Image (cartoon, rainbow, N blue to C red):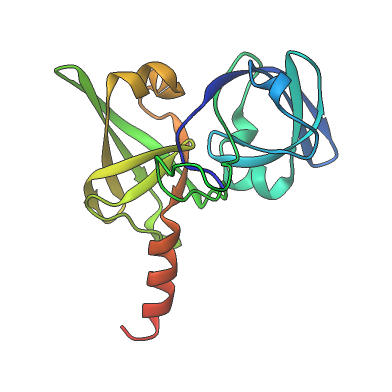
Length: 196
């Protein structure tokens, strides 16, 4: 479980295919603090550390992950948002994030607004995921508040700190991102579907 508060950025050092799996080596200052079998969020995708060195570690993404996220589009040198799993008893500074990406979205617009940025994302609403005004959403692993919610589009406002310390500063129009919708909202929607 994660909080959506990004700890560090990692840089993709190498990518290697093995069957349908993709082994991803990430150079990160977090490497010395990790251990094998530990979960780490990469752009919001929970992946398990399978090997490590002093300066980098390797995780493996399976076909299901590659099909449903932007992980398969990573290239050597790409920057990813990283968060280690939260410790029980820590403050929950973001919101409850599972690291299970629901779907991808496309960045449609970026507006600079007097010291902050507003990003607009569109997603396939036929998958029955929703956002709500002032609700939580995770974009590439970053816990954010929805500013403007529409049927298949939403906006988020990014403060300078988040812009500088996540890979939001690499986004351009048509950048694909990972979305994890609020887990409580997903359960409420599922429970009430039979009553509507």
